[in-house]
Image (cartoon, rainbow, N blue to C red; front, side, top):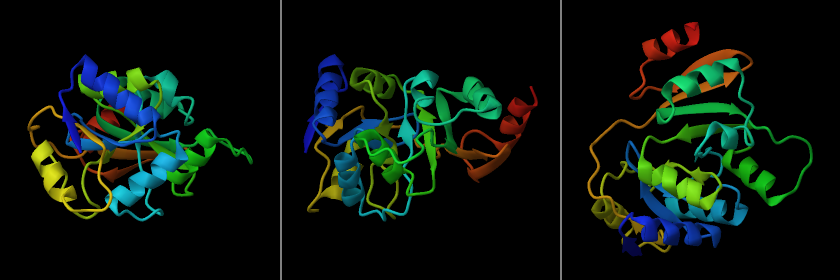
Length: 216
């Protein structure tokens, strides 16, 4: 497992590895995340093996802009309000996939894998300069699942990542080392379907703040 600084050269190397179907551990505004190219189905399958995660459990993605998000999901009026109010920030908005029909392209196959057949996808825009720089450099969305083995605690330092993956058959290919991160709750997760807004996971963005944002 290669460990590099999250400077321009480190981010460039990380983007190159992601394009090649590899996996990268990176810092977010919550914990360390585990990234693969979200449009590469082979890399997505590798991600599930890395985490020891069930394919029936969805994985969210990070985008660098709302225009990138709109290529993946359908943003309605409510999602636009929440996105403009809280993104970038610790909020994940689960929305209907834009992909429809019987398309069999790599991107479509990959998004269906990430949605676990549910037909929705969680969109996140992290308030972390390293994360956003990585997504912009790649030019594609990346996965935003936490850098841990499924069922174990989130990792807030490279040391914690190394400890969890030590001795395992599948390991991340690179870590962007930003040091120890402050312990922040995982992002608030909100699902919007058919005009109904549901909070799936409580996090830094409170229910009241979400309600207030939707009033305007």
